[in-house]
Image 1 (cartoon, rainbow, N blue to C red):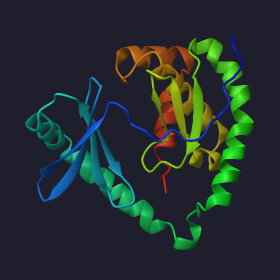
Image 2: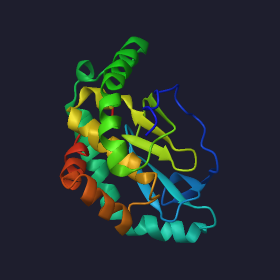
Image 3: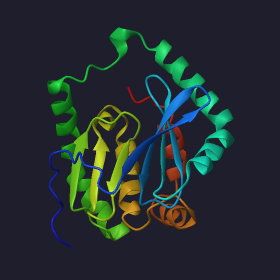
Length: 207
């Protein structure tokens, strides 16, 4: 196995994605069309706006039908987000100035070599680079074609087991793009408690 990749500057491009907007009820939804097989819907803090990731050639009417089918979930998620935001006083929200981001990156970078040494042989896939940056709606992401992984610096303020879970999650995406049966089968084998970790992680608000 080659040596663990050094975390690099954030990868900001989204190659292969095309953006558009659609109207749903009284709001505008951003749609990112890309090389994905399934539809993904996110309710993004702090205002609860909706963002969709959809296959390149999926028509708008199919996307709107999907959003309609998720209306109850959207409403519940927005209510939870609103309650979480209102319960955190302004002085309790982390200030992500340059110094705070640098400290968070240093904390994560100190843990990554050991995690990569442990998990790359298990998963059987090695990232070409790992970048750390502030994300507004994700704990991590990856680009399988380039084997680049991005991690949210907010993981630095959480229990270390969540950084481990997100890293294993993204390494698994180097095999499988979506979250279907094959992804779940691999995660069950690598990290049997991953569903519990995902559920617990999702109770933490990305601020």
